[in-house]
Image (cartoon, rainbow, N blue to C red; front, side, top):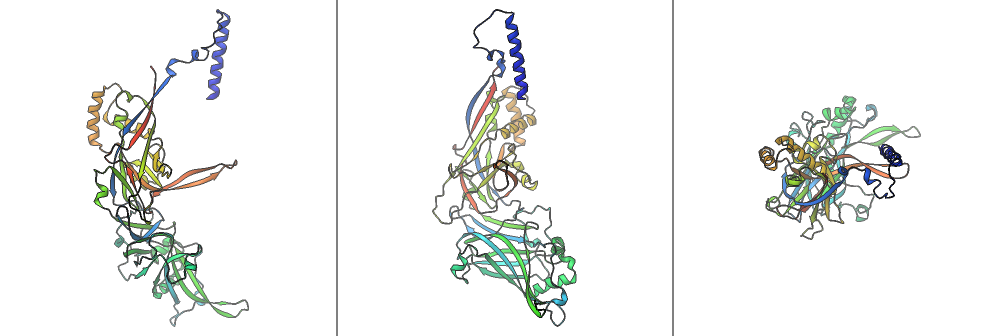
Amino acid sequence: MRNFHLRTLGTLLLWWATFSIFTACDDDTANIGTSIMPDYDNVSTSQAVYTVHSKAVKVDSVLANTSDCYLGRIVDPETRAQTTCNFLAQFHVLEDYYFPDLEDMVCDDNGAPIADSCVLRVFFDSYYGDSLTTMTLHVQELDTARVMEENVPYYTNLDASDFLSTSTPVQTNISYSVKDLSRPDSVTDGSTYLRSVVIKLPPSYGQFLLQKYYENPNFYKDSYQFIHHVCPGFYFQTVGGVGSMINVEVSTLDVYFKYRSKTAALTDTIIDGMQRLAATEEVIQNTQVSNAIPESMLDENNTYTYVKSPTGIFTEVTLPVGEIVAGEHYTDTINSACLSIRRYNNTVESPYNLDPPQTLLMVRKSEGYKFFEDEELADGRTSYLSTFSSTNNAYTFDNISTLITNLKNERDKGAGCTEEDDAATREAKYAVWEAENPDWNKVWLIPIKADYYTSTSIWGQTSQTLMRVRHDMSLSSVRLEGGTSDDLEINIIYSRFNQ
């Protein structure tokens, strides 16, 4: 394209030089260049600022398609909102999973392999709250007849009873705290110490796992066979305590046993054995969330709004598209539309204040659930990401002009408006269409977790590519400017061709 323009300009200059040979000479060259540019290429710009209104909306659930699991119950010291998290987890079978040959296992008098013990471990690295708070956990086996299946959109408000075993369920209650008081501080405070909640299951359950393997090794062929024939998973439910929430790294199901082997000297020996299965991204982990949110946070007369995760509260923003494209701006091009939303600092001083969400997704309200079910990515046209800036204490959506233009065109098409209509005719048509489509100009601000792929060029330059967008299941809360106040504004830059 660049070469085309150079050649065209060169041809015009050559023509002009040739033509000047046969005309009177003129030493004034000031207009060379501008004289060959058409007047209609001149563009003028203008700027305007419009007030934006927003409100907090309670969300009962979000899609739980993430391996981030949380367990516990806390109260936000700023808002007094209470959040409880439980989770359901299946266990993944690695390739070539096996136990020793049956004839090598230590068995009982009936020839059945003996399990010394069987435990569930919930490993975690980070947590929120008081490490000394005593929490009570109920753990119960799920049902092989009612398995959580792949490609089913499970939400955070799912009813766990739909999946619990009703025959002879393995279940137990334990109490725990984040800090392991049974070990010295020199051990638990070390960077190499792996924190975990240990749930001891009956040894008979470990024996059941062993017997199922020797009954049919194909039951351990892959995760699908294991989940449908042996162990469909467990439900981890917070039933007591308030004050701590753990971020689960991984959960494991461990079975311990003994088997016979040979030493280097070929003498018989008994070996302590252990096999482990882990809850990983290859199988389903579903966080179940319930929030007790004060009504004051959702008051539509508030001069601010909230965003809270996990699930909880989104901010709904009404974009003033009608004002932006009204009057003389109806045919203007919208070059830039910047919306910056400041955060209000906490009013309560507490070591347990929640952090603001790291990243917010702006997406049309009508697409708020479909976006995640279809595993879409923010495209900069109908959806946008903004990362919290601690420097500006704000979230900034730098340019949503394409979204504004798309909304204008959608309304025009739906209402049957054309550029030939006068303003009064358009407004009448808009009124009818907007009454049937009240959410046409509304977007949600949703806390999300964005996964990026980082690549490095041969020149050493790094770049990031957005790979996945999922709901943020971590604890976060932020109060934002907006609501019914006139504090929140969108800045618009227009351009138009001079006639």
